[in-house]
Amino acid sequence: MRGRGAVHTLRRAEPDPAMRREAERIVRKACRSLPIAPPRIVWFREVGCTGSGRGCPTGWTETGRPDRIYLAVNTPPGQLREVARHECFHAAFPADESERRPERFGRGDIAPVLAHLGVRIHW
Image (cartoon, rainbow, N blue to C red; front, side):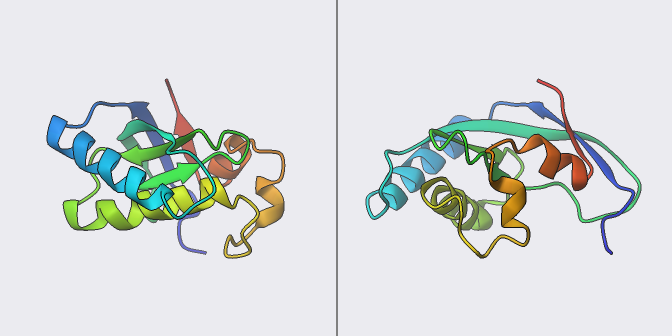
């Protein structure tokens, strides 16, 4: 399986002001058609990676915290819209069957899922 053995280390980060404004605009617009208020955006950056694997995650949502989404500050501008909208969708519909392992998201604790993917978060 691709990604086995890779460990990503993530830390909180701040995007540039233009990226922050654009992401907030995208999230507000996406949530107009979703049954949730626009979530708060928490930004992160990959600060280390060992092993080979998929590369840094670009975003995620905790099912127990639909009031926030996590976005990578190094998400390419052309991909930011897609990632932000995708995470808003998961914040609104946490049990969506498109997730590969929805049972792992049941309790809202994303840490075991990220650990399984080799991601360590240090806030």
